[in-house]
Amino acid sequence: MASQAKDDVESQIIAGMRETVDGQAVLEGEAAEAAVVQLRKLATNFHYTQVECALIATALNSLAYELRAAKHKLDAAVEDAEAAKFTVGSDGSVCYPAAGDKVDGKVPEGGTVQGSAKGKPANQPIDPTGDANDAADALERQAANIHPNPNFGRAVSIANRIAQAVYDATQADEKWAPKLRKLKADDDLTVSERDWADAQNDTGGVRAGARDYLNEIKPPPENGSSKANAMWWNGLSQKERDAYLSMHPASLGSLDGLPSEVRDEANRTSLAETKAKYALELSEIPKEPTKYGPNPNGSYPAFVETEAWKRWDEKYGDRREELDKGLQAMKDIQKRFDETGKDGLPPAYLLAFDAEGGGRAVVANGNPDTADHTAVFVPGTHSNLGKSGSYIGYMANLWQESHVLAPNQNVSTITWIGYDAPQSVAPEAMSPSYAERAAPELNRFLDGLQTAQGGPDTSHTTVIGHSYGSTVVGQSSIDGKLPADDIVAAGSPGMRVGHADDLDVGKDHVWSEAAASWKDPVPAGGKLAGLGGDSDISWWADMLPFGYAWGQNVPSDADFGAHIMETDAKDHGDYWRASSESLANQAAVVTGNYDQVKGG
Image (cartoon, rainbow, N blue to C red; front, side, top):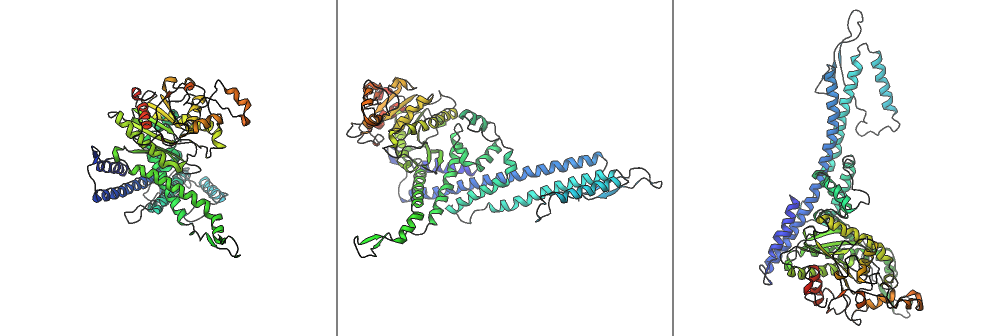
């Protein structure tokens, strides 16, 4: 219910308040903006409620699992008692009838026994050697062997099983009662970073306590294909899905082949908890001391770095920069969620998220599972989680332009920051090694999209490679079958192949945009770096230092064979400017309106 309420607030109410008619907002003004702010807070409350209720459900299901196991033991013991004509009392005692050889002319009388559990008494450590239990067992066997009534031994055994079942149920109750009591929020309406951090701690506590229950749920296949992942997910019951989602949001959100709504739910939880973790860690870093002070030597320069600042910078400087950049990237992603409905933008889906290292983020405008047209943007050199805001903005602009060309169809434009990109032009971007490592990841993601969409023919897919990202796209064709219908290369330094026909989509479906070399020098630099394919003058490579291959084909060369699209880009990063010719041409390819491509 909380999940549905969150989706209704974000995708229906807030989006509805931002509707426009002929470019004019239906609702505007201070009151409308204030209402949107409050609604966002309400959506956050519902999201937090959703996460905590999922933990409560998993905790209760685990308690029920343990109680069922104890009850099975109890039922089996009671059945055995009834079969033996014994009577089980409400206190767990077992009454057995008279039986055995006569002693002094009388059959040995029956009696009543009370069982004992093998578990440790409350607040007592378990004997690691098992000597205490072994001694008790030996004494019971000895008593049964010398007892004149043969029913005595069986009654003791059944009574012990009953006692053990009750003990197991009591232990489950005592374990889960305090864990459930911890699943409480502060008595206010603000979901703070501390609340999200507590939610992450709660997850760890429930996961540890529910280990036996969770082990009964089949895990996803190790290094499974998208089809194998989808088959695993479809084979789980709804209860099992809910449990896995609540306990393993980070790993579930990264599984290609799963429905986008599932991945989005998992990754949004990871995003909220990671953002809280970063914010709390940042708040604990001591205030930065004054960086410069008078030179204690009284000489030039007059001001130098203070010793206090040097010590602070050595201990905290790098980490604070990492936290600042990570938090800004997460705010940029959240900003896209908050813009749902603005200028008609559809709901956003977070298909992958990881803040570690360079980071990962995959953000879709519109649900790709139901898209008639899908575009996947692969950024290039310097791309990392910190660039999320710019790249998400590129694809928001492309969605707007594409939606105009396909008004009665569903369009999804996706930002794929899913690989470790080179972080320098030289020497990193001159090496194909980054593309070679990234290509399998891109192919897996695209294959996962097709699996979630229902097959390769369900959605028309365009892969857009910018700069070194186009090198990754070309490498993906070299490594295996690139699951796409069209390829757009923008400002490409080369795609590792010499001709458009060498790419999986075929020459007629390869498109190139490149501004004049004085505006975008990257294609020429790619030739120098050798990221293109073979050309008629590649013999120059033997005459140049460092194995550079001036003259290799890149997509913007006529000899490459791609459709050369007109572009009004002003520089290397300007191919997605709103209302630009560059953007309009890409949108025409994305929506399959090839006849509207200018210059192609």
